Structure formats: structure tokens, C-alpha cells
Image (cartoon, rainbow, N blue to C red):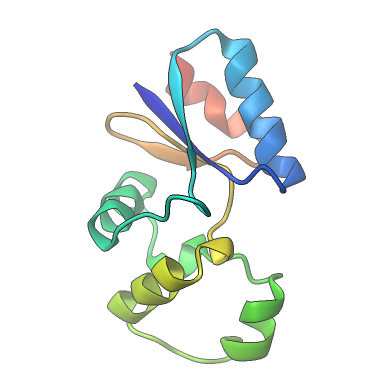
Length: 114
């Protein structure tokens, strides 16, 4: 089953959720700000995305600009930062069995729907 990591306050995330609803596929919605990912879940998601933790960061967030910009961290440190500050995670993320994508633009989701 597909899973979308969703932030209802985000326009792009809402667009991804709408795209998923219109697809007719069964999927699970995870509001990751209310139900943060565990370290293991995030690591698994990063593998499916084929991303390093820093690739998942929203660099336009104030927290990033004020506290993290220009700093270098190891992957395990970025994972801890993302777990502690889930708002920094790019969104929406749509996860399938073997692959995941960032659903911005929403057309990125299409390959997971086949």
C-alpha cells in the first residue's frame, strides 16, 4: 500500500494528497508532524528515495536558515536533526513498497501509481 507523508498546512502537500485521492489508489496518510517518523523509519524512507539525509531538507525553513545553514553534519546527525525537527522534511513524500518520491511536482507521484 502507498503512504503519503503529509503536512496539511503545506499547499504542495495538499496538492499531492489531492493527486493521490484522484488516482483511485488505496493509500495511508501519515501526518508526520503529529506522528513523527522514528530513526529507523526515516532511514528506510531515505533508502527508498535514494537520498542522503541532507537531500531531504527544506532549506527555506526559518529554523534551517537560522540554525543549520552553512554547517556540515554527518548523515546520522542530519537524521537526528530531521527527527527532532520534522518540519524540515521535504513534502509530500509518497512511499511505495520499494521506492519513494517527493511529490513536488505532483507528477513525480505517477510512477508509484502503476
